[in-house]
Length: 335
Ligand code: GYE
Image (cartoon, rainbow, N blue to C red; front, top):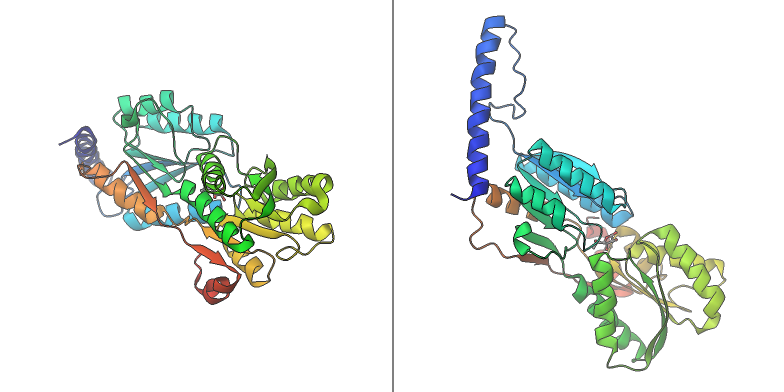
């Protein structure tokens, strides 16, 4: 039995003891109600602390929703902490979950580095941590049990491959990057560049962060249009929300998004499918936010001590959609 399973067993024994005391009390006071039992069936639910990045856009909304639903389905109690786009807040929330002695922690880290100290605290208390969605870079990999998320490096590659096919390998591109230091930003930046390295006709003429936000994507695109005007042939946005912001900026500048300027982005949220059907967005590389069920399947195994064959990285498969395929699948999209 590993330390997590031992901890779970200890928790169950303590919970049973607490329950016995409660039953004793309630029969004495004869009030009928049984407090302190959050399972409703005499067993208490495992408690999971979930530290989310924030609420930067549509993808994130779907992600939070998926985790909440999956927790409920799996019979776990979820304590939710919104990092509000600040690593500092996320670290505080993690420390607080450790102090509360939760059974497990799910962390969607805003940025890749700076997690070693707080993860060590969790490890010392034998609280398993599952990294969800974005990756961490830590000195000691045993500080977390497993990572579950998308292959965001491959998404950057897929976006570049689509663009080369579409333009015959010749285009002037402006890039809207995600949040600085976040793993999908780093990976989508590198994946795209690794593919265009062999195609000298694809030129990135400007690149700046729009923080994965619609409003910031619009703002940065306005500045790009002012500076580079008609030179801009393509927008590569690290997520759909920024692409949709850029579409607004392009329209405000009197150009036709999707025709005068080609747009390729990543995520596959509903608004992107709508924009593709309207002809304003040319391509999106799917990044599935419905990661809750996988996270809780893994967490169940972790708490049962069944992690012998659990891979350190569990990646979800992505697909590429363009204006034609968007029309066929838009009604079946779940987010
Ligand atoms: O692409 C973006 C969100 O971490 C993969 O975060 C995720 C990214 C997603 O804000 O829309």
